[in-house]
Amino acid sequence: VFIMSNLWFAVLAAVLLAFGASGKTVTGIFKSEMARQQKGQFITKFMYQGGLFVCRVDNYALAAEKEARLLLYQDMDSNLDNLSCTERLARASFTVSLNKEEHNQTIPKQTSPTVWQAIYIDRFTCQKSAVIPSFADLSFTVLLLNTDSAGNPLEHFSAEKAGLYSFYFLLLLAYFIACCIYIQPLHHALKKGGPMHTVFKVLTAALALQGVSALCNYIHLSRYSGDGVGIPLMGNLAEFWDMVSQVSMLYMLLSLCVGWTLSRGRKPQFRPLQWEHTPASTAVAVGGVFIQGILLLWEQYSELENEHHSYHAQQNLAGVLLIFLRVGLALLLASILYQILSTERSTLKRDFYLSFAKGCFLWFLCHPVLLLLSVVFSEHQREKLVTIGVVLCQSISMVILYQLFLSRSLYWEVSSLSSVSLPLTMSRVNQRRHY
Image (cartoon, rainbow, N blue to C red; front, side):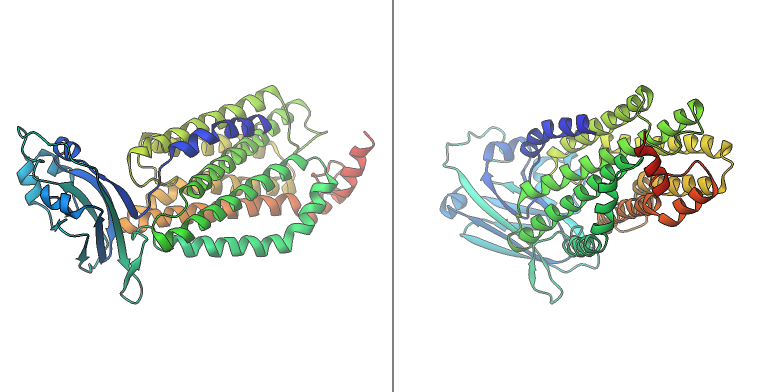
């Protein structure tokens, strides 16, 4: 665990510096050369329900001299790339002439949110043979605003992001209440130790990291709701801590399952249900963590070209491979647990393993299942469904595992019926202290 944590901290700086912001207050420079090369310089995109598009330029006299314009496209698709420059420009839904300091363009209200894209052009864009004079930089600021519940264009969130701010607030509130209720028994279990002490440490660390990720997301979205930019560093930290939580849980689950299998074949009656540290189990766990870590980083770097990226989006090859990895690991855990259950005679221990399997499968399969279900939803609802669903399902999975390992009634019952007790019984802990 500590080795993988050090690896994640080593790449933290590179991750934070590489990830870009996806704010909806966009600033930059209009470039005639880029506009000519790309048949229009891409500025930004936004999923409108209906609202306002605002553009401000710092030198509107120069913009008027260059005949600078912004073209707004609704549902822009790849077919436009095959059109000539003039044909492509003619497909614009709105044309915003930048001949004054600020221009406001109203986006009509739509029955379903639609992606709009903004492209910059000027009088040199379609004139391939014309020489582009040396102009001063033409800086701009673009604000993209959706309508709020009262119909006023004040909402910075794109339609597919709306609602996440409230979700993270409620999630943090739930974490706080749960922490107040369970911090004392959890602290007691961690302080007492026992055969499953490492499990509690990893579970607690993973849950804490998920809470920190939610807090970073909330801070970023809170600022974002006011200025359309937010704190990009906090958004990147949220993704990073979420990834560390993911690999920590993966290491724990793989180590437990493989360790239990090896333990049953070697000494089935003396150390049941404990975290077995063997070269084989460590190699499997570290290998799975390494592969998932590489895919997570690859996925994020692949999204750098896009203005909008999300850890749960799975919109590239790395994301698809991550889904296959999760399904493959779920099948691996299923086969390991099946081997254990097929030879286990104790009903109580079988219930223990079955409950553990529920937590494992919920953790690994919630993401692939939610991605499949999201296909039937509208485009603006898919990301929210997957993001909220994955966070909630993985939190529930942690709760299931906590209840399983902290359950006093099951341990006491087994302890009274068998000389081989489950972990965290008082008799078992006291016996091990004499060793």
